[in-house]
Image 1 (tube, protein in one colour):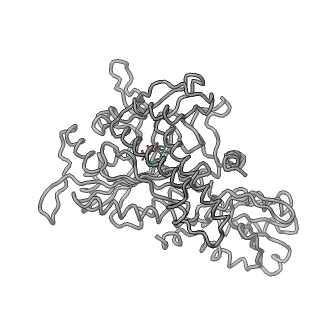
Image 2 (tube, protein in one colour):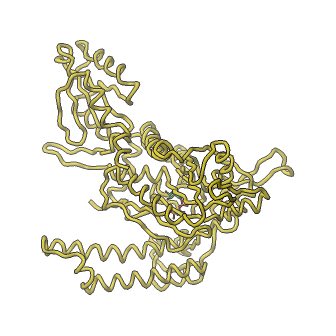
Image 3 (cartoon, rainbow, N blue to C red):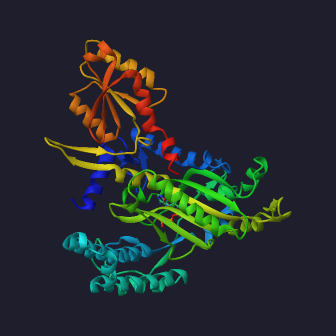
Length: 511
Ligand code: ATP
């Protein structure tokens, strides 16, 4: 099945099984805003816990923060967001559709890469075991031609972005003959800058009202609190502050479901270091974060680093961790070396000293900052698209979410074989004993087969069936979601068997 079709099915599945709903659906929805249903919110909370604990529990020198969404408007002037938090937009005059010029060009670049991948896959099939990928990449004329086109376009694109040359971005779109996917034409407007911040007013009278912004990133709340945390927590550099919270961006094009939203959640960690050591820390955090992703077991080949074409105004190094979504490799997380830009700016705009006194060096300085920034929703989409699986079985088929058990919303379902003979009571008793440790679900409706399918569809890793034998010897069958194998075990063993598989500890041990 084409990847696009799989993605459509995944979106429908998320809705049908209570993971994600369109916001304000009964009013025909609000574009690029989504609500999380009963299972979605559990998965989201588990992702957040995995991130939070890996930062705050596993690192002695990383602590948490929860800063407000509303902040003094000068913060956004100082950070550069008022003047420079822009995306280049372009309209197609025929379809009246709006696009991000940089994204149109990135998609064109991805096409060259796809062509190369296709050539390689074809050759691999033809030559089998004897295939030497590196040699093929270096010698095959079609691969070389596409690589050259990619490199040329990449260099031109990076230069245009760095020079902030909007005219050149348009020219690239024209020269590459990029068409609007809706109208199919190349009738483009000029490229313009568009600021992504939402604003609102604070205060009760119109004269007294102050224009404030909904934060487009959580990081600034960390910067303006860093000395509060450092002093009250007696933190010594290097140290980090982690925060999870909502962010808002008036995205020009909001497509691909929860990949790009106008209201979303970020998990950010700012790591404050001694000037001159930031690039070493950048390298360390790059590795730590990649390990965090790969520990989930979705296959190392589905992740890659992507160096930025253009460094943001505050950065001296930046890399993205990309995951192979059904619509291609895309950013999930950014790791940025932000220099001392933000703190210096806040010092200048607030007039307050934001220096750290280093007792070892006996001097004060403005720390440098390495940031790791990941979107909860994008991570959610990554997890769920990796987990979604359609399987043909001997007699029928099933849709199963192969979520890592640690992240699964429901850990176990307890199913009495029939609704009588004391089996429901026995099932309830099992739940009563386990519910303090695991999210359990009781289900007695329909045949056992149907109940298994329902649990597969929401990704429950364990189904426990209570039958007549249970009332005799206190054993049950436990069915494993992925292998569908069943095993007879003592009720007393359940907690240990399940506890081992759903504990975050086994993920943390891989980090
Ligand atoms: P993009 O290039 O995709 O617009 P970005 O480089 O602007 O993203 P950052 O500012 O580095 O993103 O934000 C850090 C992380 O926040 C991203 O890696 C992503 O996971 C998440 N994120 C950013 N914008 C959105 C959005 N509109 N919807 C959902 N998640 C987002």
